[in-house]
Amino acid sequence: MNSEDDRKSEQKEEVKKVTVNLPKNEVQFLQRVAKQENLSFTDVLRRSIRSEKFFVENENSGKKILVQSDDNELREIWRR
Image (cartoon, rainbow, N blue to C red; front, top):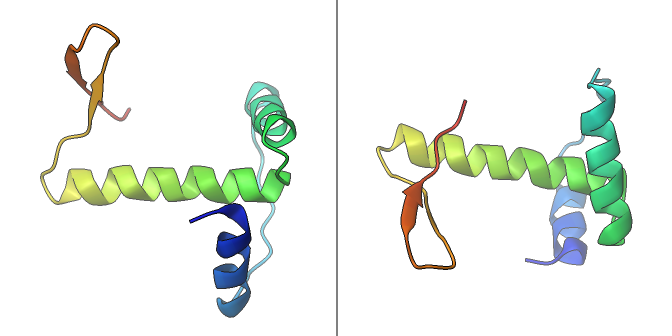
């Protein structure tokens, strides 16, 4: 799903405005990603939340998330 599709599906969902306090380095990271990928800050933050949701749901169902390195070694991702 691309960013345009994300926005269309979100328009159908009820939206609630929230205020968050984040460490400066996390805000700068999200701003950098938004600029690099030509997205809004909100889009990057939504994507981050969806990523966390993916990890939580898979972890809760007993699944493992693996990352394959350049040398084909598999490592399990652990959430903190």
